[in-house]
Length: 452
Image (cartoon, rainbow, N blue to C red; front, side, top):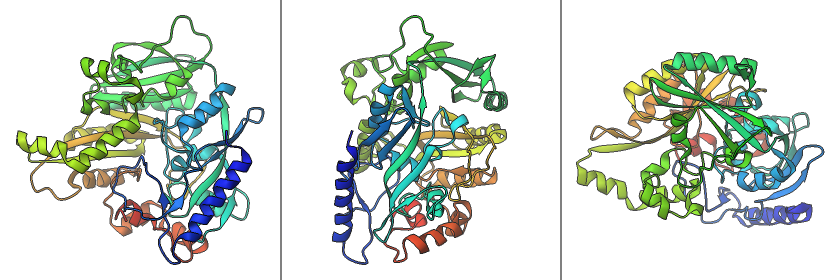
């Protein structure tokens, strides 16, 4: 762990890098990696966050941790799990950072009972656009920034430290994969589980799902337990987690492997690189079967247009990236999937129920309402000469029609008026006026839609 002295030194380096940026120039992070799936403007000089990448301290008695903003969940879990503790919500991919999950939202199977990652944060130190570092809590003078920070994507500042609550967990997770023939039945089961926190009189601690086709949908129910007999499964080797969902009714994983069950094959996206073919998988080093490696391969493809060249050789007219996570009311799950199958046709689709516990102005979901996050990631063939965002624009429109929202980590195509109506426009204007009066930080619309 870093400790407080090292943290103060890291903050000093951050402020020095801020002071070195020419007055009036745009302030950005100087970071080499990202879990975003939209273009980013190149940064010549930015904020030095290299040393803000660790855990400051863990208090196992109080079940809290002080964590630097650029600390990955992989490192955070490594620091807390030896105490039998984990963050309330651990996003699916190892290299997502705590600061990123809070300012850019995150979700996982505990979200049906714990909300989103920022809801377990009790206080934050945030460097604002004017270079000041303020401590924001739910009830101090910077409460407006505390509540406005989630989904701001750096348009209000950058978290240097976050204090989060931790949950006590046992060593194992017992899984049940429950099949459904249609989305309406799955949605009804989700609502029952979210309400009862149980299914067939067995406690449910984690809940997500996989929709392989309109008539083949599974909900995976996780029970955190120490009462396990026999060995736990291992999906970091030749076996693949998502294929097991269709093959097994029950399963057991260690808590560690459960947290990272989706990372090894980037859900199912590792298939695009051949990593699920038996021969290639045996040759592919285990340490390279992880989401950040696949993300780098995507970057290389975008740089050298490998898939584009193959498509042209095969006579494929055009292809569009459709990489999105959206939230709709659980009662609209079947409506969205029916529309999605007709207009997009991509499967599998990941399903993750959630309920928020407090209101957050930049991502205004209703407290107490059950939503379902749907994740779909890949490319789809589209007609030649299709306009930019041909399918993604249709998805945005349908999600809005159903009263939902979509995450902003990937490409967005909203006009400014629609965007501001969906993502707390006036609240954001007021916050930026207070915390970034010189507009040193890029505003949210320019970041998320214009990619500047």
